[in-house]
Length: 175
Image (spheres, rainbow, N blue to C red):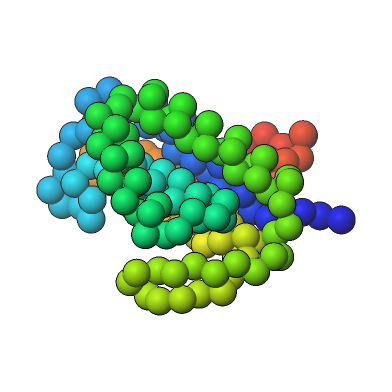
């Protein structure tokens, strides 16, 4: 039986890795360079935001109250904002391993309650949370792609369809 939560998370981690691969190809200073014509002030702020969101939702699935998780995110944000691209990429890889371990050892359909200070109470499941972080990541990876293009560079494909193709050992990506 296919583990849909794991499949969706594996795609999310793969797409994040593709973005980091591309960022490593670009001039080193571009990661933290201010971009006035963008939604986020820099590529690093987008990557930190995505990381903090993913980290927060894992903590919530593990039983941490959202309010407590948000408070901890403020400290984590300061640490992450000071890091280099390679240090941030390592954080993403470590968090991906934590997610995979969680997914492999927990019931993805077990309902839990989230008390969101902005939106109120929500009964949800880890599966829905994985879909949330994946779609949230897609949204912001789109911002990263647009920001990279604004600098005159090409971005990288990281959509779900390409991910499915890459799972075929014989597939050679045209991009």
